[in-house]
Amino acid sequence: MVSYATTPLAVDPYSRMMVDLYDEKNEIGVPTAFQAFFGRPETGGKTLYSPNSSVVEIDIIRGNERIAALIPRGTISRPLGNTQKNLNVTKFSSFSRRFPLAEEELDISADQLEFRVAGEAPYGEKDRLARMRSLASSGHMEMFRRLVRLFEVLSSLSVLTGIMPAILGETSGDLVYDFRRNSTHIFPAPVYWDGTTPNIAGQLDGGCDLIRQDAHMMPDGLLLGSQMMDAFIKDTEVQGVADNRRFELIEVSTNNPVPRKFDRFVAGGMIPRGRFRTPAGYELWLFTYLDVYTDDNGDPVKYMPDDQALIFSSSARCDRYFGPPEVLPMISLREQLYQQLFGMSLSTPPMPPKIADAGRAVNPGMFYCDAYVDQAWKTVTLRTQAAPIFATTATDAFVTITNGITPP
Amino acid sequence: MSVEVRNDVSNVPFIRMGMPAAVQREAETVAQDAGRTSDMVAKTLMSYDPAAGKWVPFTDETGTDGTQFPRGVLLKTLAEADIVAGDIDNVPILVGACILDRDQLVIENSKTLATVINSPAGVNVTVEDHLRTLGLYMESTVDVDGLENS
Image (cartoon, each protein chain N blue to C red):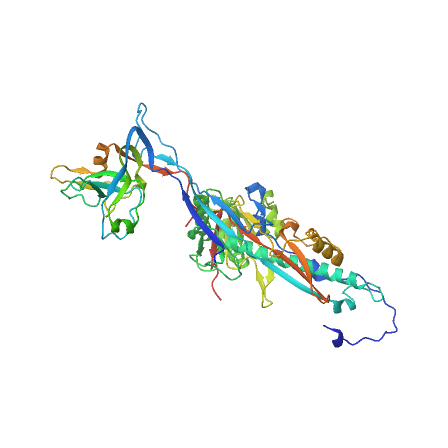
């Protein structure tokens, strides 16, 4: 309540005009580079909306690249040894995952509505309902932005670690979704990239081999933390092959058009830096990703850690599942209440077009909006919920090199 | 409470191919073992004690009572408590004329298909070769499908 804390101001003698409000929140983008891995039809990625069921299930079959047998002609009997092994099918792993729940709430009190809202011209005669709608719109938009940032954090953890927490901070145990990344796919750099003769190309070739052998697809992307990129371009071996010797192993250049398959990552915030052909022959397109979110202490945190490198295949199937809200079923009475209070439909939140940079990876079906009012009819609480799981289904298509920089 | 449950499913058949004359006995008796400390799982290689008229798991290739020769394969799991309590009747046992998945056959007491039976002296036959005389052929198989990383 602010009534008694606010002293009315005297009317001053000047004539004034106001220009449109500048709300920085509306200018802040919501990066979606890691989310761009998920739900992509061209990779077979699925987007599942589950408004009623609390558990999502998937069966996974892993394959191999064995070859067929050659046997002597004229043998009508059945080989029982190792020459021609009979084939087995119908082995698979089945996973059941209960959705997490993300929730944001915001109160608007009757008292606030007596005061001018930001951007409202003095004597503009905005009524209290219009003010409430303005506050509600602004509030919901911020909730969406926070949730999309949370999506990005969860996506980054799923991609970088193969594990997504159901509660932030959890890395193992009952409250994580473990997509079963092969443990060899996450390893500390054998030699710091800014150290002596780190053999960066060798480290990358090793990671590429893991993806080719375990995920059975070719890696084609390399996302570098900012310090890793710095160490990469300063490394003498890399500089050597980047020199003009017709080896054409590396081009750190903007003159090199990035293939269209990476457009989604660039739209989400990745910065294309060039192309690197490893000595073994893998072709990796280089990216950095500098976007940040603000942690609980108010400090900026990069979605892509400075000292990590991610080798990936853009062909990897990654799914995203969006579960139900945790609120009683909507009835027409509450939907009408919401619409009359805030002037917008409960089932069609005003986004993503109004959220900067979110258009490629975010849509309204991921969110559940509602509001509840206290018995005294003095406060309304806005609420937005989401229940996302970002599953790196082709989990071995990623290799993360950690601890790549000499600790300070 | 956990947010995730994993279940590995395998429906790979153990009996790869049964000959028209394949023999499965369904009313056999497995002998009591008061010292048993685990279940006797399906697909365990079994021997037959002719003096007692009962089946026991194949565990010793040096016996002289006939149990040094495996005679069949248990087709259902028997609970430890039931084995400790007494003889178990009406047990199905596969005794011949089948091709089996060698990877799924269970042999107790660290014995293998390569274990050599030489009792009485001069027999000198591996478990696998002996089973072939019964028409039980072990086939090597390979998985097309794999489970997710553990």
